Length: 321
Image (cartoon, rainbow, N blue to C red; front, side):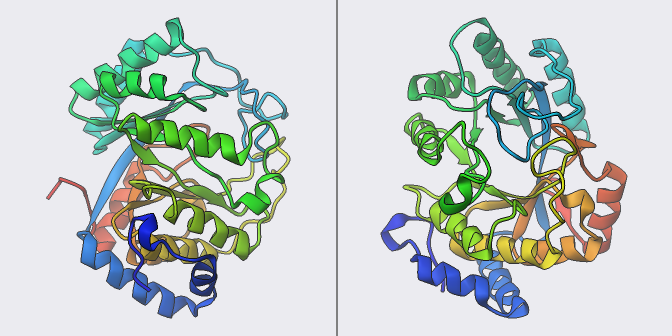
């Protein structure tokens, strides 16, 4: 099946379930074919992510070290100052990133001095010639418009998992809350960055449900991060076994087939994946990664190991060629 990025011909649940059940190599072959129709297969979009306000989040997401409900070892840190963030963005640009993402452990955006400071960060990062992305929790359309006016390109707000499994992951925010934030972001003319996490104890059917939901949004997300759970001690999901690498490849491949024009990002958990598994994800349509040593509070492959892998596979950061 060659689904498009619109709901007019969005895939059915049955079709997505069928994709997930295909033999892996057949699935990867189709995904690779779709990928090459819409993207340059040797280029990777590179983002870098900075936690601009860490810890103390009132949400109870079971995977997250920053939740105030859990006993994670992440210390609470206040919102950074603009100068520190701009300096970090300059280092990210020098390290090969073309997009700079800023994350604050908030339940929702609140108007006031701190939001004004974030708007200043967005303006400063945009002035460096980088694409800008923030993830700040829930946001209304007026706030999203202020972000757009400041120069924001992307707003990240993940659905995390399929609706049927969502209650096992978080109870302080509903699935419809998340969808409403995505509506507000689209209404403000911002690009959406929206994906999920595999390995939260969900079934393959719940993964299919997540990707079906993403592909059937009013507009498919421009950027689709596929995260693998990194178990954090002290969180409710800290003892979950690692998901098999083939399930990550399968999720990437289905995402690529369902959302052929979207950028699919191999995100959290990449440090735990061996090089061959990452290579198969890139073949299956992943064309974006996070660079830098850390993703908010979890480790990421070192820049030197990424450079070595790029060299082995003949890949290069977007715009470097």
